[in-house]
View 1: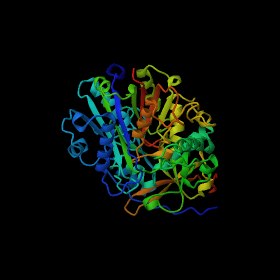
View 2: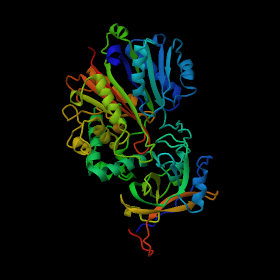
View 3: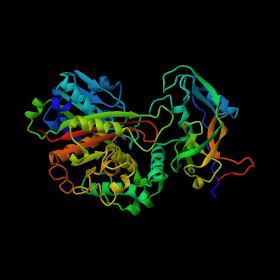
View 4: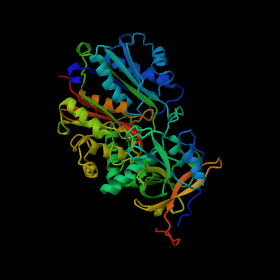
Length: 384
Length: 145
C-alpha cells in the first residue's frame, strides 16, 4: 500500500513546552498544527485531511476542524486506541491519500495532564471486574513486568538499563523534561511505584503535544524538505477475550510482521527505532515481540548500552523518549514518529544521530500491557 | 510481618448480565459462566461465549481455588486505594480464567507467583461483595504459606 502510494511525512513539530499554564487543550492542538504546517511550508488552506485522537476536545474532528479553521476536509479520523493512535493514523492517512480521498493530512495530539486537564476513560464493560480492585496504570504494567521476570528471569537491573539509555540520550535534548543522566543504581534506589517498577521505570508526565503532516509525493516534491516515506504499517489489538490473558507479550507480535512484510525489510535493516516507552518494561517486551531480541532475551538485548546511539545493538528513542524527554497528553505515539523523522532527515542531535540512517521503525502502544492494548508498527525510509 | 491494611470495597456497577455474579459473591459463592456449546469457562462473565459465539451459557459455582499468576505491591493507590501499599494480582482459577483481584490477609512481602490461594468475599454494603483471594488454608486450618 504505502510503497505504491509513496505518501511522505513533509512536516513535523513537537511543542517545546513541558508545563503549560493558561492555555486550553485546543490551543495546544492549534499551536502544534501550525508548527507542523510551517515546518512543511504549508498552510491551513492546504489541509484536506485531519486526524485527532478520541481525547480531542468536543465532538472529535467536527469541533476541532471548526476551531482550527480547516474548511476543505475530505478525510477525517478520530480513532481512539490510546497512545498508539497517531501511529495508526499515519497509516490511515497514507491509505486515504492512496485512495485519492485527500492530498494533505494533518495529525495532531495535545493534552495538559500535568496542569490538570485530563479526561477519564469512559465506562467500559470490563470496568466493574477491574476498577473495584484498585488498578492503576503503573500497577497494571507492573503485573506484566513481574510475570516476565518469573518466566524468563528478567531483572530489575536490566529494566533500569532502558532508563539509563534514555537519560544518556536526553542530556543532548535541550527541551527534555529530565536531562540528567542516571545510573542503574539510581533507578533501583528510586521509590517504589508498583513493585517491581520504581519511579524511574516510569515515563514523565508532561504537557504539550506534536503534529505531523502527511502528503502525496507530488506535494512533497515541491517543498524542498527531506520527506521520509512510509514503507510499511501494521496494527493489532490484544485483549484476552478468552479469559486467559498472557502478560508476557503484546500485540506487536502481529503488528510487527505486518509492517515488515509490507515494507519488504527485516529487523536487520532497521537503523533506528522509536519504541513506545510508557514504562521500561514496555520497551523490553516490545523488542522481543518485534523480533529484535529472542523471546525472553530482551533483558540481555538492552544491557551494556544495547539501546544507545549511535553504536548500540539498536539505537532507541534518541530524543530521550517518554522515559526522559516527553510523553505529552500521556500519549507517546506522536513524539515517537517525530524523532524517527529527525533521524531520517539527519536532523537529530549530532551526539545521537545514527550515521546513514535509512530505515527507522516507529512503534506505538495504546491501552495497557496488563489488560487490553493496541500495537501499531510503522516502518519509515528516506525518500527514494 | 507488616499488618495488611483493610482495603476499601467499592460497589461495582451492576448490569443485568453480571448482577448474579455480584449477588452470589455476597452469599460467599464465586459464580462463573460456562459455554454450553464449547464448554469454555468464560471470563469476565457475559451472556455469549467470546470463543465460539454461542449465546447458550450457564452459571455454575466455581471452587474458589487458584494460584497467583502475577502480582504487584502497589505503593501508589488512587482514590479509595490511596494509602498503605496493597497487592493487586491476577489469580489463575483452577477452572482456567485469570482474574484481576487483590491478595489479602497476608504480608504483601510474602506473596509469590504460584502461591495457592482461595476466594474470600468483601461485602460492599449494597448487597454485593468483591471477590478477593487469601493464602489457601489446609483442611486442618493451617495455611500453606
